Image (cartoon, rainbow over all chains, first blue to last red; front, side, top):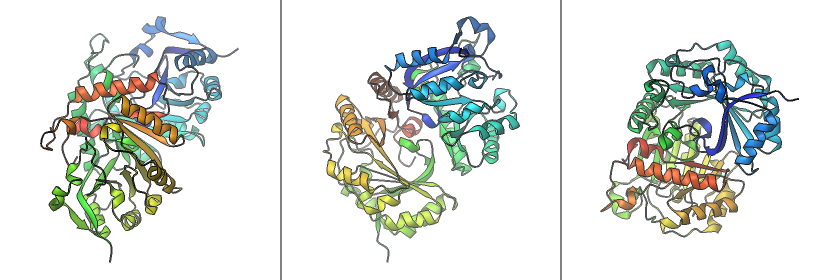
Length: 243
Length: 243
């Protein structure tokens, strides 16, 4: 019998708003549970145990049935997110999804390596910068980088709110010179949230001001290997869930 | 003696705002002159003969010296744009730029194929949809697709303002099933411009409404091979020149 996977939500198809797959139609499979507690986490409902009643324990087959229903059995990009999806037993899901013709991208902070990372089409490692309040376990991150298989695009993505985060991103880039790095504009909405309720409307002026600052910083430093992007889904749909 | 290239402007480094290289630091080399007159052209100053006095005739070596000065001789992505850069003799420029370690992306409507397309790192073909007022020469576009060399990423990019443009994009995708297609939100600012002067401030609400419509359209049709993007530079800097 297949192992159960803790799921927070499955939704889509919608548009991937971040990173190397920005703009691609995708279905999100968000696992529940996380070993981190980032100060600006925008998916606390998939992280904090007090949301446990909203989570489901599903088999790989059940998840795939749900995804296939959402897309009429057409092959699609599946984005595995969390929480930290590396905590879940996703090996069978990846195999089954590939059999249905889907491709799979997973985003994780890189705190735990799993052998099945090698089967992913995209492994997006997003170690958390100082503003998150988290400490990076560099040996664990090295381990994640080493798991990527010959068919896995391994990518780094760093959220940047301030100068300290930016310096952290530069350090990550130096440590992994052969891995493409995406630098992402931080979204302060979660920090502004009171009682864990985020403002639904995004402050687009503020986000674009942050983008201009970050773009200017990167260009001034001639950090030409970086790619700098805002979160497109937040610009389009604000901080709503399920988009 | 090297052939002269008609140049409208060289600027950067800035951030590429469109297509497969969205978010990448780049220097733009914009050639002058165009065989098209798109109704919503946002770079008429590089198209209309009445701007001729603003153009320069430069050698490949002079262009490269300018680019290298802008980036302190560091390797960078050079974005060749226009006008229609396929009208210019860019062969030597591409070779020289590669010798300096730069990579090169060119965007053209695909109305004229050149053998040196095969030397580009990225060939972005953007045939123009009905709203442009232009007719597509499909044989010429086929010819451009066929020029791409083994090291050339060939990409299609379609600007979509309305249903007719969208249908055109679907047709292009059917014709070239093996080429990745980017669908781009149309920017109505040029259409609204009076006396060819564009409003500098972008109407971000309108652009994001167009993005939501286009994303919804693509998702509803389960057109999962497409990538849908707005123009990031317009969101960030409006319709200003030189960004």
